[in-house]
Image (cartoon, rainbow, N blue to C red):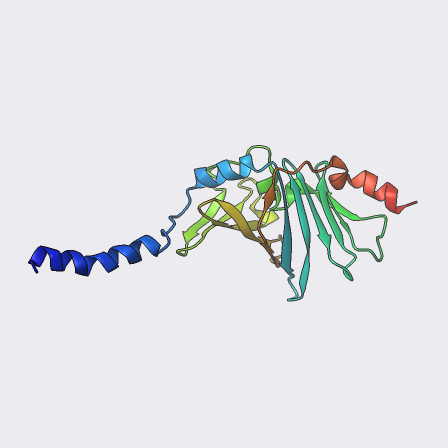
Length: 204
């Protein structure tokens, strides 16, 4: 047997292994992530939330960009969180069944991903951009108001998908939300994000 034939036989198993191994993803650029978020019009997903006190909540998330998001928590947790009309409303199901705590969406880090035109390349918006071999993480803040807090976004590649975020609020409290597979493109009713309508419904 010739030397060339022996070499080919020895290299063949290695070539097969290389074909079977997954292709290693690369770090996503800020422009790629911005394009992904701008193209994300509607999405639903199951979520698991780790609260600042260490407790865990689960539920279903609805997103309708720009500016709208809804967290429906699984029973027995009666909480409902809505973002719409430039406001965030928290219905806790107890003391404020029909009169939610409200504050401007623009004062929360979630506004960064719900803006009509996401541009993570804006000066001083991104304060961290890293890659761990499987996912890209971006830490961002409102460059005009860093005191509002920050958000860490984790994305996988091929295809690009948002998998997790960690919000650090103005008081330093951290809330982690991990997402299941996103279902995109659904026709989500505007009523899901209508805070006045929800207040009216609960006040009957």
